Image 1 (spheres, rainbow, N blue to C red):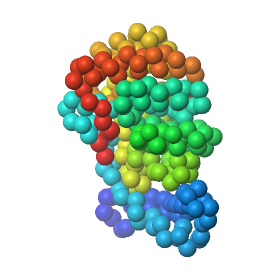
Image 2 (cartoon, rainbow, N blue to C red):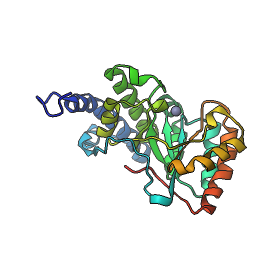
Image 3 (tube, helix red, strand yellow):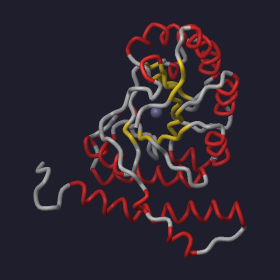
Length: 256
Ligand SMILES: [Zn+2]
């Protein structure tokens, strides 16, 4: 693909596509925030929130921690879930840990109260697509765009206007196109270094051991708060978080 040719490259297309969705999303979130704050909302205020306020970020997949060499990033995927997200939030609160929640759009839409709790506790939001299609890297650009931008809108509306700061492709199914689109919306593509394998429910001890053994791979650790019984994840976090502290790690967010 020509990077600079003709002015009809991906960026123009992405920007055009993103712009329409942005106006909708911004208008809706301002409406929600204002309705909550003062019980009033005016089209004039909504229009003043310009989509130009979104600052593009780097398109490469982030793994590093903003806390540097002894930082770790706790990332929690696939929620929010009414049973497990509150338990995960409790453990994080108990150990004073801030995490990054990669939310599925429909889950966020169904549980806006949980999205707001996550934000209020100081955690960050990450767009994890609408339908968690792990083969979306094989699908059309139009499909990828809809999955990413619709989820961005669902999460932002559910949070009351707080935007996701990252985009994690389901199953890591990134494409150059999806990374650029996310980055143009201020969402840094987010990878992981350590898969705790908690999704497979191998037992709490196995989850803890996997994290301890694979931590030399890098700082970004993957857990899940939805998609089935996550009691092992909750118990594993209860052991891993204090262990990380005794090892001298501090808890940060993925770099943007
Ligand atoms: Zn996932």
